[in-house]
Image 1 (cartoon, rainbow, N blue to C red):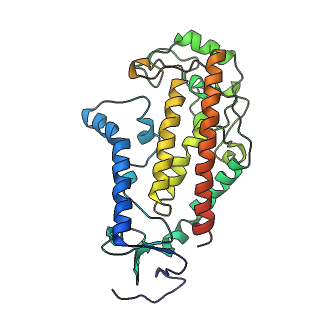
Image 2 (image 1 turned 90 degrees about the vertical axis):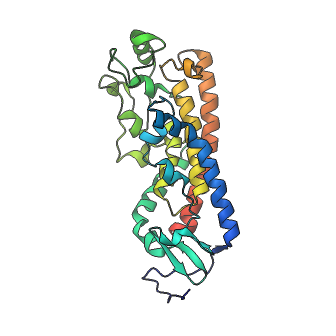
Image 3 (image 1 turned 45 degrees about the vertical axis):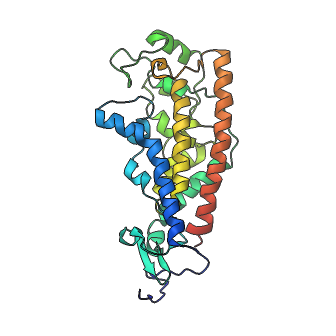
Length: 303
């Protein structure tokens, strides 16, 4: 292998201060990651081949745009050089150097705008206290004052019917701070929300108790691929999948036939259960958010 000249303005990598993985090391990590992802997405792929939908888990592959095949592909992240016959040398954004293959600095520079936006949002979210009084009512607001045939998951009944669902919304103060949930509210539900989230206000409103903000750590992680380690992206996916289950268990839909017993947020006990799980997820998400920020601050903004 010919050693390229080092050029701060080009794409020739330097391994100074980085990590070099021997071929057996990175192959073991790649195989472990692929096996983990196969276990996480296998049921979804089987349903997709059979043409069957799923009201809980399809969200992870429709709302989020990262394909299972992309999630399965292992990346070491910036600052890591792979020795031996790494297929990464033929992948976009990677370069060969004297010690092996790694993500090139040109890609890091090209993605800087995305990195800075993600960092601003994550840091602003982390700096706020977690609010846990929303009780998952965003899903209820998405079907408020609808009629049969108008709801997203039409194959599943509303636990309390349309009138009962509307009554729950009207008995509570909606306080959704997450734009990508609020934008799916019905027209009648939006004026009932205490806030009016927009994309521009997202860094000012996002808060670490929000289930959707914590699920979106997966989106932020995969948007930084291949700059961040794939293990971190898979951790975010796994957290998002578990949060999504609570999200739908607390929704107005009856999903008990699929094995999801409802969290009845219209009751005092249901609210207690919801907040307990919400706080636990917020703590998990905080650790994951810190890990993303550590990678961004240590490798992506100051390589």
